[in-house]
Image (cartoon, rainbow, N blue to C red; front, side):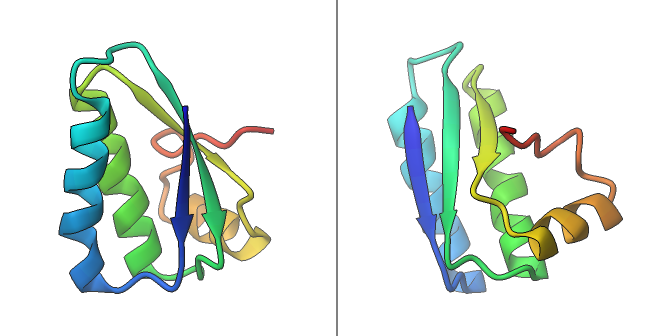
Length: 90
């Protein structure tokens, strides 16, 4: 399954994004969601959004795998110790 997350992301976008992903994944356990990031800046809001998406996916028995990650966002995820939580497709 493909999911495109477009930036810029704002804190007020997070609840709606989580709800939409939850609705899409409901009843589809075992799916791997390839999350393509377009114009997503490396900041706390982006990491929060991605961590929430992973949480929603795991609650539904799915997994989010990040795609098209910028080096800056990759570094921030690593710095925050979330590499295992937010795996990246290589």
